[in-house]
Image (cartoon, rainbow, N blue to C red; front, side, top):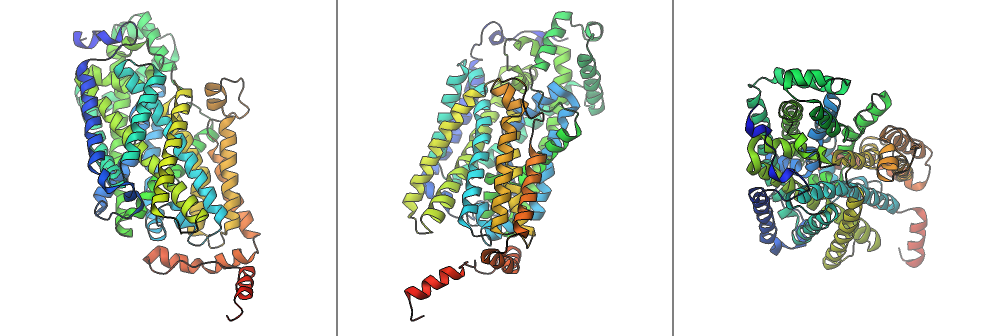
Length: 577
């Protein structure tokens, strides 16, 4: 065993201390570059977020990188390898879930959302289903998804900044969250898009380097990597494995206990063998992607429907490569940690599981490489939070304020003011909730956001796009059912009720509500649409063909619904007509 691998880093011993100056410098340089890019685009103003910018998404490859950067976050980069380290092959379903929803997004929704939208996915649904309450519901669900997604990013940012600079967790969350809020307020959509493209490239390169070094350490044999990881993980979880580790790896009983402590520190969120829990997790990962507002918004900005579809397909390719590399990294953490017990050096960190990727980077390349990987995480957090902030701000400023309250007559300056206020309020709530969620799995929190997207947004979007009988009444009823049931069941789930709220015996035994809440949403849309015999419902069914034509070829004007009472009032006010 090489001495460099077994030596304890100076900053890991004793109490938490800042890392080396080289690691800090790498992160600061990356952040300064990102902020300079925001300042460079500041003259475009925040209005850039409310206008098409065809020069950015001019082709599918660039748009695919932007989508990849908007989707992948520190939850995937840090959280999934940590879960593989904790649970082994059980966590590999997350890697399949990263990619599974993207072919559906590309083939079913990309072109339709582009052709029917102006700024948000609510525009696509409201092209035919024009009830104001439906747009309000979609804006609220978009805000909920963005908020929970932001909380996960705050947790990740707090962990990384606190780890690098030696701050207390709550102070690290406040500092990182404040920087992210400032960046989001400063830059427009153009700057965010370019940051997402750079971030996607940076993340892919770092992941490839980590995977390459892991394979190199194990003699370029993927079979040996997975076989050894399976053997070691099985022995570690079976108990009584001290003799195996002492004989094969030269690790004593105390080190084995330290390894088991780090393994058990992770949440049981993805450990269940129950078929219902596994099915609910799969539905969350697949359909959650179809309902993420900050991804669906990007299709509206593409130059054409063809480029929107190509962007989603290219994103599926890049995310698939990323997932394959993460599988190698996750198994590499299991094997190399057991051989070198580098995680035992960090046993003082109660949340050390989410740091396992950084610890692997330190074991492979010392402080400089760990600093580069930490910089990639921070840039990823900055890009994702900026995209989420813009999505939430657009939902409030465009869907609620400009469309519902001002009936399309809002001034651009008023929209920008409402958008900035939304960003400030959203980030303040995210920072507070991020502090409250200290020590919890980043990937688990993101999965809760995906569960809401799969329960409230995806059913309404799919039924509005592909079922002629869907009406506003059905979409509102189904969306409310999905959203409320998802929130209630998540509140009473073991992860929230026991781990976060510290209550006893969660009333709902499953970690995710998606199987129940999404089923209720589809069922509610179907029942309430079939029983809707109102004039609005008949009008919406009659304009199904126009929606299909517009969604396919991007031609045709948006129809405007007027019921009989509205016509009578118009005639009474103007008898000459």
